[in-house]
Length: 401
Image (cartoon, rainbow, N blue to C red):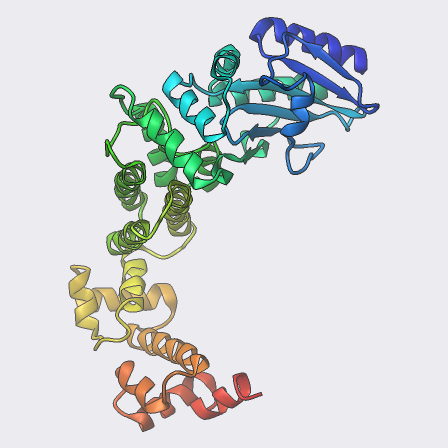
């Protein structure tokens, strides 16, 4: 197996110009291709500086260093002790302005050597990185590998904010750029189709808006650029989710929540994490819609009720909001859920009342008024019909233990 792996690795190096290193069980290293390492670091010791948090024998890892260098780790434990390390390389060309900023933040004085180091690194797009891993995996283990099984350990977001903001600022002040339409369409397609796993793979490629393909939306403020880009991204994701079947009001409420939350972000890293979570939430809403047996009318009615429990809710109001007649909506709702609209509204209000009781911040009378019951007596009567016990007994059983 050692000979086969070594032979295969030497051929790959000739095809790609990327350094390959075989680390054996006895800690001996075999190198294929020119070993490129940072100045003042003796090869191959630099590999020890970039080690994934774990090595899974069945899952290759793309490891992104704090300065955006990349390594691929493939464990060989299934056949022989050791692992294959591919790299370092980069996913796109890094401009000199960016390099100067990185080196300044890391207090490096020997600029020429470090700039030469970065310029020697082989460039391999994310798509080709996955293809290379899948090819190697198949050739070594005679098994196919799905992209989702490739782990991406991204350490870029672990940089101190000073380093992050300055490196981003340097790169974003370069010449005007254009959006990558194909990538944008791919993101929107995955959201519309509810493909959360595939979207996760894309989101794990690194910062969303740090690329020579993303336009500059704020010339003097890096964080503002990230927030503006995120707002545009969330707006597009909202429309994609609606196209995928998500109720319009639900999608736009989620959009408003994330856009408002963005303004509280104090770093590009926190904004990056937030917008990625937003994209996954939109996708999961589509997935939920796809897996429900309810019609859009009934799903939208349930969502409207959920968001108007603290208001006077009449069936005609729900129907008017959905541009349906009360009789038609009532018939559809009863047929699909087994409950009439009135019963469903009552159940949701009691469910909400239970949560308010557990919070212990309001009296029973206040809860009754808030949820639009006629009075405390009416609230207690309906609560007992739904739960089999009074509000007081419910509190004693769940709070006063």
